Image (cartoon, rainbow, N blue to C red; front, side):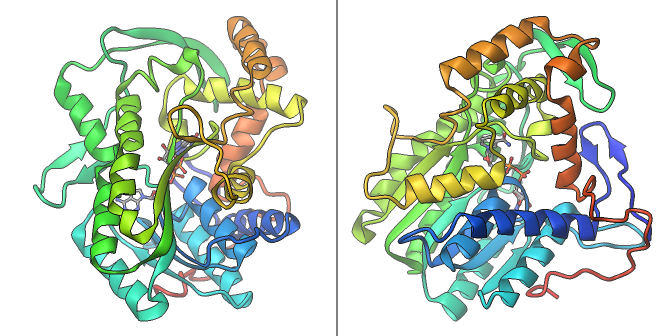
Length: 397
Ligand code: NAI
């Protein structure tokens, strides 16, 4: 099969196995180049481990700290002439590299919101690792079937209260236009978004793992949040997804209480805005990211998911005094939020149009990152070549 990108809106329907493997290898090389993380994690469970921040967390734990990792995700292998999903290929490549390096790595493919997958994960931890000392919670999903009620919740990305109009970009065509997003019509949309992206499932995981006795003394758990600039507040932090993030952040004291006996601790880390499958779905945000990339690259402070996770582990999570903000959160969005960065981004935001997009933004960097997520735009890969090999995740095959 010859695999080329097939794009529909903010989704790429195809993924390239060798390209995604290259993407994973590049991330591993970066982690190796940074040296070992002192006193890092040793036995790690990553929920949402196949793409974005979760994959980068898994790579950081494995190659930066020689950790055994179990990854949970929801991905699809290739079928009937259709390539597998990027997260499937990423996980196949990750496991192969980890095994070659003598590291334990197994994966579970299924709905992390379900009780069944939680139980399967516990069984695997008991069988192979005994206990885990770090649980990374990095799910991003548009829907969740509640394991207790059976209700299917769908999240929405909407403002609350009044319509929001601002600029947005179609990052494929480069057309900058105004978009108006209507506010949620009822409280139910807010509650559904909280049910999907809030902290309940993180709590269910920690409760279940704790009851099963598979959390080690001194265990840490971390989940990821976002704040961003005022200009995206209506669609992000003050919108439905922001309510879910408030709920996620509000789960920290609850988990700390649950983990007290084990001397365990939970954190939310506020990460930088980056191109992932999830963030490309949010209106307005891709244009902001294109301008942010431009400014941060010019200042030499740009980071991708792997650089962010390396810094999170090495300079925050595994240090003697974990640096927190006044709300108790870890901040690795600190460089994004620097006043000089934000001031320049706001100036560019005022000016940006279809005509000057190429010159004043890093739309090229955005597109490259987007296609890289699916294994495209890597120079070393010949995209005209047939890729007939069946790619399996070794521990699942
Ligand atoms: P992503 O879309 O790259 O990764 C999501 C992961 O969740 C994948 O591994 C996917 O397989 C897994 N997943 C989704 N539904 C699942 C299910 N039902 N069962 C099992 N696995 C499932 O997303 P990204 O961007 O890495 O997001 C991870 C977290 O980081 C989210 O909480 C997000 O809000 C947060 N974050 C993202 C930022 C960004 O700019 N992308 C910035 C700051 C925080």
